[in-house]
Length: 347
Image (cartoon, rainbow, N blue to C red; front, side, top):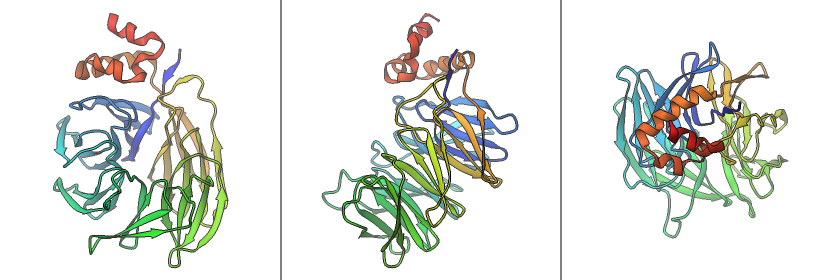
């Protein structure tokens, strides 16, 4: 019997456990790191339909679990002590709103994907603040691929262009800077005295001097697209189209590479999936394409199967259908697997 892969659109470490949101279904989940198993599943209610990547950011502050919308219509907070969800409206919602966040004091700054403004959320007071618009006239279709903080500034990569945006938090203004010609940038990371970008044209990581914006080094990786972020003094790169990830040092020497093709025994969520990572207790955690929990400590990866078996999936499916009705069956490919739609309907 195949298992259902626990894919995640965002993950957060808290007290020997991982909180995550399922990439394809409206599910808030918890992985217990003492037993390396999923020990909590809660259906997230009140979304109009079940879409890929409802949420692309998760942050935990004591009793609050904050879910940052991508294709969802609200910012959602789950209160542990009340076992209840609360909803906060976002102005002028759109598809692919945000793709993560950056932390500064009591504020989460949401990284816009297609949303046209910088949005900050005070996670202590639950107040939403709207700042500058980043899309100038004629750029309505522009997309931000990723963002990072660097010395009081926010940096954003404008997806599939050779440009990055520098946002000054004091002046609430953007400055648009061009890197090399003929780039299709998707990711940007600041580390040390360099910026690192991922270029989809050359399928390479390229480093730039921060001050002169002069190219320093390029290393071919071969991924059509990838997600990249900083982990201590390393770059973590995860492929979008396959279950592969790499670690690089600041000089772009490959520190570690992992390719996992062993997911034939699992029911996958979709072809477009990439690992999400989180750090806790000096350990790097991720959930790969196979739905395995990956931990890296002392440069050594370890794996655990946290996928959901058929019996547990039956119970989860019933809860989803109770909340969303039969429409979820036509909107979500996972609910159609191997004739499973007919099986559920009969039950």
